[in-house]
Amino acid sequence: MTALKGEAINRFLRSPDKPLAVVYGPDTGLVSERAANILAAFLGDDPDPMARSVVEGDALAGAPERLAEEAHSVPMFGGRHAIRVTATSRNIGPALEPILADPPREAMIVVEAGDLKPSSPIRKLAEKHANAAAIACYVDDQKAIDGLISEEMGSGGLQVTPDARAALLRLLGGDRRASRGELQKLASFCHGRGTVELEDVAAIVGDASALELDALIDATALGDATTASLVLRRSLASGTAPASIVSALARHFLQLSEARLKVDRGATAEAAMRELRPPVFFKRQNGFRRQLGIWSPAALDRAFELLSSTESEVRLRPDLAEVMTDRTVVTLAGAARQPGRAR
Image (cartoon, rainbow, N blue to C red; front, side):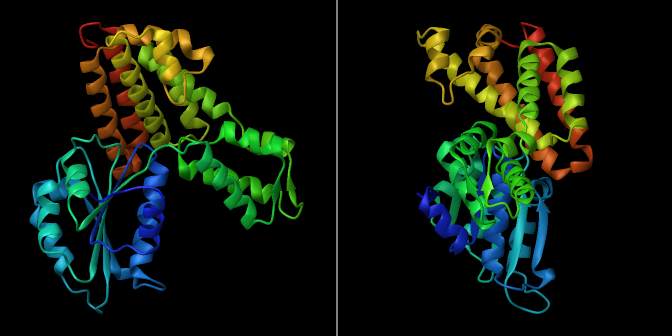
């Protein structure tokens, strides 16, 4: 098995030793960050700008032989070259299989994908083959966020008071890239002062966007398309990235699916919500309970497939990201509003 975890991921990021890596998960920021780190480590210092190429998954689905041809080609000036593949909902397994059967000597392929189910063909391929690595990028837990705080503040020569750290742990998470960006803003704000105080966190790292996302998610899952669209426009106008919104929706529907499974096995809604990690915030429990009554397991599977597809599309077409996010929100809200479609 080559599904990397823990320190094995860090070792691979520093020194990739397989020709193919599939980097996937709901944290799109962490997916992008890790994929970039792998490619940079493989190419080394001061790489030739022509040593990198990007291939869209849709193109490979239609012409799977293209990837092997590019991987085995020799760059104009020789040396290593790296290929970044942006996966979509279409199966690109047939493009990856020749790479694993006949690995290129001087090429590295990194596939970036959304939250893949265990049954996903490319995830299964990467997890089972000795020439591939599968790297999951889940939402940072408290320990990972704490480490990120120490890393970013430490690089700026800053100490963090206990109150400030506790506030950051509550506010950050969901998207590694967004969390790192908030911490870098905070470090710049506190530069030269030596210590980060609670007041600094309150001034720079607000939780308004998190509250907006909660409202958007609940309106969507409850079928309130009008409110969902209104909050979506407000969130986008305030600078929330479409990818972050879609990722948050995907995480919520995964939690809803997990809780629904527990309820179907005999647990009460309250017990199911308590057992989730993280548990449902008390102010959202009434809405979550109603959602459990709206969405069937089959409908939740369809919702998750739609969100996974949208995650991929948003990365591929940033110019259309807002339109695609709005379309997905409206589709999900419509399904919740019509019982026949949410069953």
